[in-house]
Image (cartoon, rainbow, N blue to C red; front, side):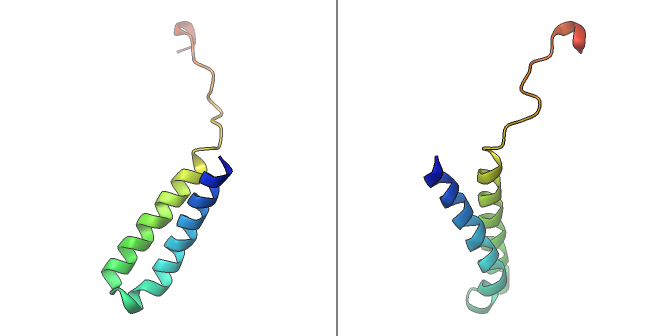
Length: 63
């Protein structure tokens, strides 16, 4: 599990780096697209391990 967290963190950092550095060597559109994709992938993976506050299922009478 710790290996996955480091991969997601590295993906988020690579996304931030691509947002700022890639427009110079990849072209602006491709750099921004790659940066956003990596950043969102990393952030999504990191937040999946946070437990939800709504773990309990609601009964029919509570709806």
